[in-house]
Image (cartoon, rainbow over all chains, first blue to last red; front, side, top):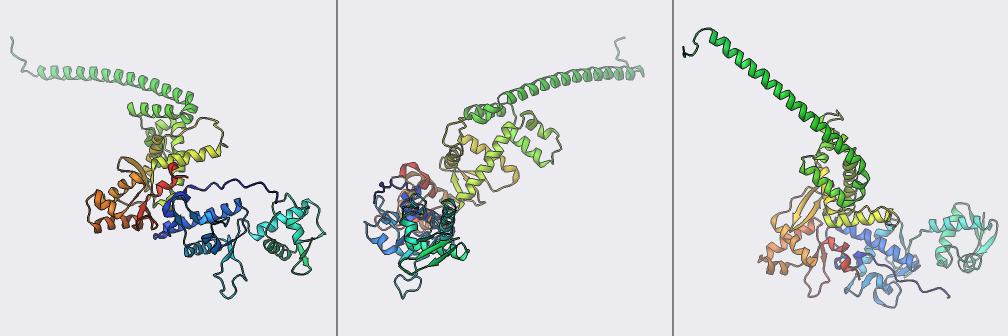
Length: 193
Length: 269
């Protein structure tokens, strides 16, 4: 892809604070810590345009783009998998994260893949709706692939969006009566109203 | 001849003398009072003039403000206390508000507004520091906020000093709030929860200032404490939310960190 390299993410100060990587015992402190982790994860993922995280990948493979998020090698501190899951649950209560369903079938919720909603499907849907109006695409039929990869939407904020996430956003529009889906799973078409 | 008057006339004479002393005395008093009154009114108008002329500078120039505050203290004018009690007395407009009126509400408004911001910072960070924050940190955070609001431009050199923050906290006192200044080691902190620190806890916080963290064995070596004593002091502070635990330190012993070091510039990699 011809995208320019992303500039390094400016980590907040708490990222260099060693106890930040230990689940705090005191409940009030723990809550403050969870809040800080939540906003760090969201801004990191926004910066690198990451839509979903594989927890096992980010904790174990240094080549994963999200590896630095939970591992600060310069102070030799890392987050444990169980605490990451606690943070994700904390974010879920805020509507800022969701386990990717279907991944690792069998285990119901404690999957490995997680959606990170630095924009929720509703927020993405809002952007699409605005774009449809501004570009006069009302009444048009487009495929989801066209929406996120096509030339027509290049430059819009949702260009390059994870296709599965776009489907979620489209479903929000369907519920609002602003769109209708058609076609098969492979090549989902959308008609906007 | 030289006998002192012992007749009835003597009574009259003494009455006359004391009467004339009294009139003379009251005459003196009135002139004195008049002189004082003129002096006061001159002083009043001068101070008012000064505050009006330099109101802008008092707000924007921290060193000027500090000098002005020092001058007021030197001549016995506590403008903060005066205007605070004005609020309390239901705006009767008596003597209590005189300085507030004189100073054109510039100076005390400045400190009241600052006090509100200090309270905001304290309550926002209470979760991470248990309600104890260094005055220097508060100043830094407020300064950052101010710069952000002004759009990163250096429009108006409105800096803040630690002295300003201390004074602002002082204005909160008449409200009977929990905000107070405590000294840990040599550094002033703002405490926003009504909680007393015992001497051991203060000693731990003082030790933490050196490196940013402390461990039980460091306390045992430096303060010559028994393990149980060091452990209790440290765990109490964790219980108050004033220290953070780091369980991944080299050597396996837990370190206890001051949350103040989260805001330290030196630690940012």
